[in-house]
Image (tube, rainbow, N blue to C red; front, side, top):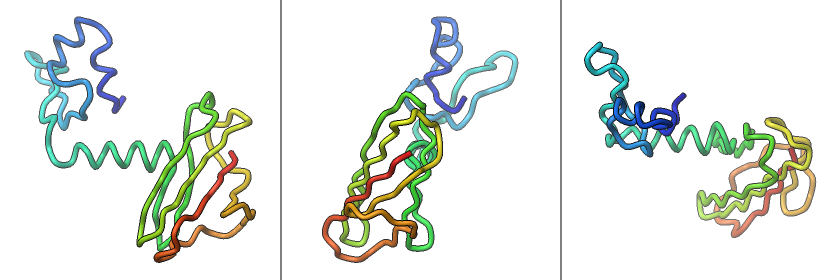
Length: 135
């Protein structure tokens, strides 16, 4: 599992892992005398991978070809979450609602209260745009 907390569930695994459980380690060593030990925890790429995993692959916010796509992959117990995203002078207030306890998929998207079947285009200097996604 990519989540570093998984390496610190017991006292034994903490003593083996030996690095911070709140950052991604670049290495998990395999040599017999240090097998399971983490290494290179505070390096430049660590934060970008957390961003990518959390924002893109869990919350589902993806920016592609001047559009916003929202493709959540969340625990079915999550009822709702919000994202505030600013790009090109426009603030997108995104609310994702999960009334049917789904893990993935969207049923409906509303932009400023109007249902749409189109892509969410990134607009320049448009103030605030409210997006509601129903899973």
